[in-house]
Length: 371
Ligand SMILES: [Zn+2]
Image (cartoon, rainbow, N blue to C red; front, side):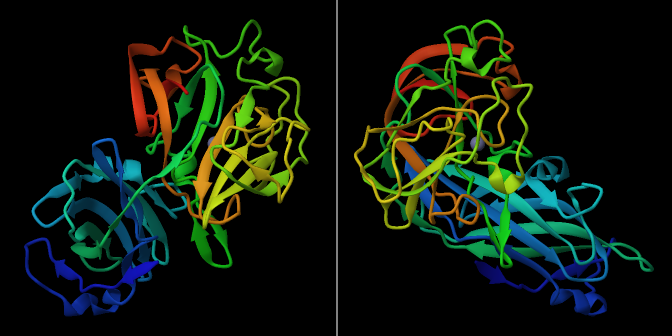
């Protein structure tokens, strides 16, 4: 975790510099990076995911205004309040995400992309209002910098066999993987940063034949799940039963969201996680060596889930919750289409495109792919 407390310049409405009045806030408002990220190249694009942490240790409420992210000669992102609110999660009790109460904090989720990479410092400048109880409001800004390195993406084999699969994820999804931090002993972790939920569909966009309430009718149900790389099975959980129908399913507590799962250690500090597996379908146990392509389990409907699917992610520790999600790419797959909106899934057909062979890539959000 990188923490930088930087000088804050305060400007009154008329533009008068007035620092000393709010000197108490200098020490207590901080902007930091949750974890220093690395640029990862996929195809011709470099991408960078990270999270900004804002802490308001002062006695006044803060309201976020703008966020500007820039490199040496390049502006990466300029967000006004209406765009910033979509990327921010505040501790405000009324869920006003641009309002950071006294003693509160906020997380801002950032995804950057570039085709031309330079070794440069990236500066994040956040502008905000300070709402004083007794004095007139003031604007202020705080900056923090990061120095990303470049890493090669981890290349994985396919996690599933034949068929069409929708790769469901969306960084902007307010309650999705990317947004769910877990705390352990005062430390925060974001395991689902690059998680994908794979749901099988047919060429018309149907995910179930006949009655969609019966999980037996879901075309992805009981499909074989494969080891994405050579490795050693690290953890296995087979404690959960399934309900026969979607409507009878009871969601477990958040810490049991994975349902039945397997983790495989594929490299030093790299664990592949497969979640929501079918009860008693797991064919491996901790310590087993697996080869890329081995069938390890069947797709199921356990844990926190709205229908049978495979949750897949890569993390730096063997923990479902208390680990950081790592980027990865698949060796190759075909992209055949995409859902314009996740809400269309199950309701209307996906949009077909010309079959595109992708090498060492990751599926676009809500793309329909075939491994
Ligand atoms: Zn998931």
